[in-house]
Image 1: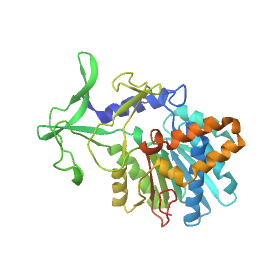
Image 2: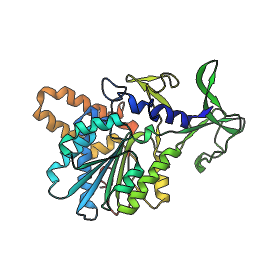
Image 3: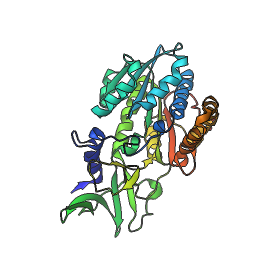
Image 4: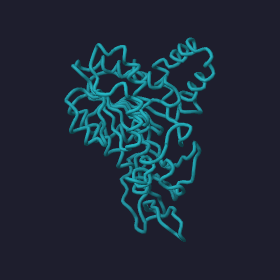
Amino acid sequence: MIGISDFMQICLSHPSEGYYIKSEVFGKDGDFTTAPEISQMFGEIIGLWLVDAIDKMPASDDYNIIELGPGRGTLMADILRSMAKFKSKYKLNIHMVELSPKLVQMQREKLASFEGQITWHENLDGLKTSINSSPCLFVANEFFDALPISQYEFLDGAWYERMVGVKDGKIGPTLSMQAAKVALPNILKDRAVDGAIFEQSPASLFYLGKIIEVLKRNGGVALIIDYGHDGHGFGDSLQAVKAHKYAKIFKNLGKQDITAHVNFTSLKEAANAQNIMASTVVSQAEFLGDLAIGLRAQMLISKNPEQEMQIAQALNRLIGEDEMGNLFKVLCLHNCEFTPVGFGLE
């Protein structure tokens, strides 16, 4: 038997058979579509947010823009196009943290016009050892949801880790034989009933720690956008997606995406424990709305009236209550005194 965490790690990141290593994951021919692939508006708004953040940060000769899990490079391409009009104000060093050689090649093709400005890193350790001392601005869009989680189930007064095993030749869920020690948040203590499921993601806190190390050394900000919740609770959020539909988790191993909801409260608490400041958590609809994405949509429609329906549909997918608007959350971490725009604080 192996834990859910190891199961996710193997299925997604195995050096030769992992889903992110060998699969076509994005777009119509893939299994899911991310916000940057839905519309250029998303990346343009993020680019303007970065410009505002740089203007509010301590002045520097140059700045490091770092994207974690950059997909096909679409988000970075839109960010850099949006920031281009300000390029005379400062120099940008672009860093892409990407594990998949296949995706790195796609990113190189998408960002060919920026060759020479971009450095690729397989992991955050590689980034940390090679990056200069200038301020850093991290962008992590749908990065944390793919990091492994552990799950525990409450039965007869004890917690048992949820595992993956083989029974009658089939792979499926099971429970550990021995009770596990689980460090519940104070708000959840003594509230579990039989069948309750608790999730935690040591991997998320590990990678967050790497980001914080860079922020402490260099100064800067981290913008985190993902689907998840703000507040500790019980529940099973593990899910698989194939061909843009929910799929059975223990089928098509290595051939479908497996993710879990991000606990933004745990990220905030971990950052605060390291003396890193955290914004309030807002919905993607609130964040993009504060940054006037509706006005940007109207500008695009005025220039491309024949695409009015497509642009309106894309806008709805990004901010609609029944689409990504409420499910996706946004968090800003920073260790410099400034107020990030988009969080209802200005």
